[in-house]
Structures are given as C-alpha cells and as structure tokens.
Image (cartoon, rainbow over all chains, first blue to last red; front, side):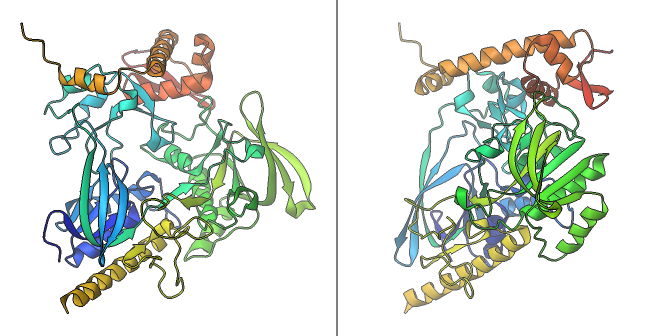
Amino acid sequence: MAESDKQYDAVVIGGGIAGMQASLDLGDQGYRVLLVEKEPSIGGVMVGLNKVFPTLDCSSCICTPRMAETAHHENITLQAYTEVKKVSKNGTGFHVELIEKPRYVDAEACIGCGQCELACPVDVPHEFDYGLGARRAIYIPHANAIPQVATLDVEHCTFCGKCATVCPVECVDYLQQPEEVTIEAGAVIVTTGLELIPMEDKQEWGGGKLINVLNPLAVERIQSSDGPYGHIMRPSDGKVATSIAYVQCAGSRDQSMGYPYCSRVCCMYALKQAILTKGYGDVEITIYHMDIRAFGKGFEQFYRRAMDDGIRIVNGKVARITEDADHNPVLRVELLDEGGQVVERTYDMVVLSQGLRAGWHPEGVLGAREDEDGFFEIPNLKLYPTVSSIEGVFVAGVAAGPKDIPDAIVEAGSAAMEAANYLEATRTVAAT
Amino acid sequence: MAEKEQTPIQIFRERQGGIAPELKEYVKEQNTARKVIRNALGSGARTVPEIASESGLDSSAVMWHVMAMKRYGEVLEAGREGDYYTYQLKGDGR
C-alpha cells in the first residue's frame, strides 16, 4: 500500500456517483485513493437531480450519504476544485500533475456559514440551477455541497472586500494562487461523467434560444424543493405551466448532429419528470417520441404507470419548434400513428430530452483512445467493460458510454476491482 | 515616510487587472433593475408580468431578478392570482 503523502494507490478522476463508488470500494479494501473533482463540490450530476427513476427516491437523499462517506473515509483524500493537467506512465504506475484552482477562501478554516455570500453585492446566474436561479460572486455551491466551503468567482468580483469584512473566522484569502500538485499513483480510474448534447446546432428547434424550451437538468432543478422557483413555473414570466411537451431523442439518434447513438436514459427521465409534474397539479403532459425505450428492471411498469396517470405518449416526429409573441413554444409535429398528419400545437413549456455525451476528453492529458462516439474506447467490451486502452487506466460511468445511475455504480465497482487486481499484480511483478 | 503597504484586497485587484468594464456595466444594470422592481413592489404584491409592465423591464429579466431577491430574502411569495404567483417586499405587511 502507498505510504507517502504524494503517493496514492489510485487516483480517481471525477467525483460524481461513479467516482465516489469506485473510491469507496478501493478505500474499503485498504487502498489509499485521491479523488479529484473539477467543480467546487463532489456529487456530480446526481446531487442536482430531483428524483431518480423508477423508484422515485429523492436523488440527493441517496447521494449525500455517499458524499459524506467519501469525504470522511480514512483512506480517501478529496481534491476538489482541481483540474488534471497531465497523466503520464511511470513504470507500471502513473505520474499525475494537477492544478488546484484558488477558491480565495481557506478551505480548512471556512465553516460554511454563508455570511460572505449574504454580504456580496453581485448576483450571478447559478450554474447549479442552469442559469435559472442566482448565486453571489462568493458562494457556497449548494446546500449539500461537500466540501461545504465558499468559493469566490473572480470574474464577477468587484473587489469591495465585504466578504472578508463579515467572515467570522477570517478565512477569505485574496492572495491565493493556483497551486500545482504532483502525485504518483499505482492506477487511474476515470469517472468524468456526462454533458448534455447541446442544442445550439439544432436551429429547427430554436437553437437553444427559446426561453421556454428547457433542458431536462434545468427541469430537475425546477422540480426540486431546493430549486430556483419553488413551483413548476416557466422562465419567461413565471406562469405556472399547465401544458408541457417533451421531445424525445433530442440530439440522440441524430446523424446530422453527429450523435447516432441512443443515450439510454432519456425515455425514462422524461417519464419520471412527467409522472412527478402530473402529481403536482392539473397539467397536460405530452411526450413525443420515435419509440419508448423502457428496458430495465421496473421500467416497463413505470411506462405503464405514466400512461395510467394520463400522460399522453404520442408517436410523433417534431420537425420544428418556434414561439409565439408570448414566448409560448409552438411545435410542428408529424403524427406517425395518425397517417403522418402534420399539426401545430402550442404549449406553456417544452422540454428537449437531450442525450448524453462524454463530459471530458483525454486528448493532451491522458493518452487513452476514444471510440467513434467520443467516449473512452473499451477494447474488450464484452469481457472487460471497464478496462481502457491504457494498462492501469480503468473507466466507469458515462465516461465509458451513456448509462443510468445503477449501471454507473456497478461499473464503478468493476473498475475498482480491476484496479485492485492491477495493483496487486504489478506489485507482485515489481517484488520478483 | 515609508510607502503605505498594499492590503490583500488591493493586491488581489491589481493581480486581476481591476474590474472589467463589462462587469461594471453588468452590476450597474443589476442595481438599476433591482431599484425599479422595488419601486413596482412598493405599491403592493405583484405578479412577474405586472412588475414587468410597471417597470418596463423584460418579463424574463424580472423573473430572474425576483427569484434572486426571493432567494436572498428581500422578496416573499405573497399569494396566487390564476396561473401566477404574486410577490411582495419583505416587511410589506399588505
């Protein structure tokens, strides 16, 4: 096992649910793990979701215990707000160069009281709420953030000094600079997660410019009890949405956009959001699809529940989305089950069920190959689904391909086991 | 006499090249918007479209500002009128 502070048995890149699971699985076996996360907090996408399918468990309620366990584990060191600059092979292990970004706050001293945020005079669109809500220039990312410490966004700071004045523990540190950190690791696990396929290139659907045409993660925030609005309202004018349309396969299965694959989760998250919204009040919800993919455990029953709840699930291709003078989205749809009839329908809000693409690309940092869809190449997908093209580098979660939370967790466990086997095999080889 | 030593905030400001003109403009617009929204709410609880109409601001901008003011405790949700919630300034007993 690793002994020095700069040596770890494994470095895990990406602190979402897959990264935390892999770290815990290795840590529980006694291996020393460094978990690197580029955002100010671990938790990934999952901590911002409302509920998960098909169980409708509260997402943050099941994610935050993992976050706390990861942060407090004696064998896991958290390196948040840090980017990976370079990973190079060093014998059977790896030389990892990191850049720790300055928070301008002493993270060891900060008690997460939030007084700095309350004193700051500049409001900024909050990334956690996909711009719908606000944070301040100095802010704690969200109520469940770990570490629960403030970070100063220097691009929006007016240097008024109020944060330092009100801080009860004097932990604002304006003199912080980026810090280069170099470590040695026996193995690497990549769990860098996802991005949504952007809609800027889909001009026929508004090119990402129509205010009441939303991405599904923004809708997760709207639905969340700690979200930006408190109700299911639309961003243009605060109207409570009484008619909502979902457009499936937004970006996915779209050769013209360069994403020919199915993203696996969009049918289920659309059904989930629709079921939850229907439960909040009298709302007409229509899901326009090419086909509904409900393949997993409990998924078919979830789909039938949605239909029983009165959600209209319509086989239709949406050709165009525009908006009227009141920013009501207007869909032009070809109804495939009605002889190809083309209709125009107006809604309060539209959700594009955007597909998933890789959240990080290793080019220039780590010499791993990507596949034709932009995810990490897995040379032997059938028998070794978490082994990358580089010996000693393992992949889990959406970094390897679109998947849901349970599959990401299973893969994380597999990657951790592969990493453990690799560590034991290379140490044995080194000893003889 | 010794030169006055720079404070950390001064050093910080210098390292960042001062406040960018775009940020100055952004903060000015934000303060102006907040002022006109407070004026509109000064007459009592309003919906977002009503605030937009009275203030002359775009309703989507009003929505964002009102939600920000609600998050940081300056505005409270007052009630509901049809499909819209109404908002009032905190401390406004109406």
